[in-house]
Image 1 (cartoon, rainbow, N blue to C red):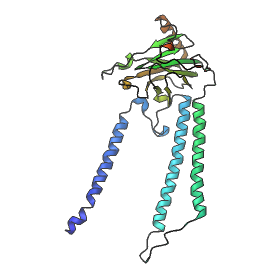
Image 2 (image 1 turned 180 degrees about the horizontal axis):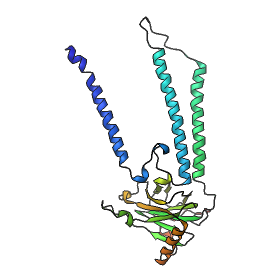
Image 3 (image 1 turned 60 degrees about the horizontal axis):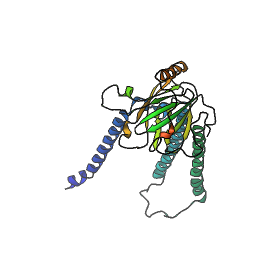
Image 4 (image 1 turned 135 degrees about the vertical axis):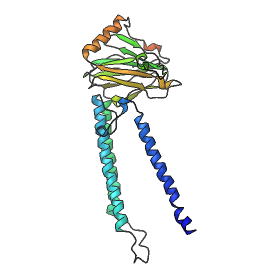
Length: 297
């Protein structure tokens, strides 16, 4: 019986250890399933590698916040371990210590310091959020992105051309990316996205931009980016919008100005001139809102 009693408490521990190990392996496996442009590393805080000026701002805020949080966590763990060691029960202790004590300066410190930390976090977050949604600067390119069940239309306002998207057909075979719409952007130039929705709420999201914004029927939302790297990236809807939400995909190509102009010329040659009318929306845009270039209402 003694042998049985001594071994039985270890079983729950072994089960717990096995559960933790399986959970950790599953997390790593799921993390490895992320698409290429979603992967990060320690230098980005495991965020996707940012390809816009705004994305770099987000990465800096994210890493700074984690450094502060880790420092606080280590301090708390260190104090906890020290208290466990310094105030542990001794062999010659014959009675419990006083169970009710207070220290006014320490209690004030424990109240004030967390409040100051929250204020600092709020300041930097509010500062960066204001910069990310600022549309006061004149854009070089304005694109009216129209979300619809379940694809995307792009109006290039300055060039007076458009592109109509169709829903992605995901068969598991190569070539699906060639059937979905592609948004072209010139590298190093300020781009303003004017976001509208034809039917239900969608969300315009390019993970590599580290920024997204909802598209609400009847409203016009805007934000600006400055792409810093050429390449092809993936975009998707980030708001559950119906049965085929997962197939509401698009590509983003950040290219040189010459290649961007060539694509605009190709759209004209394909007779895709003019802009798709937003009166095709189920709900009319609210009074005072439009999709004119320059960011104004």
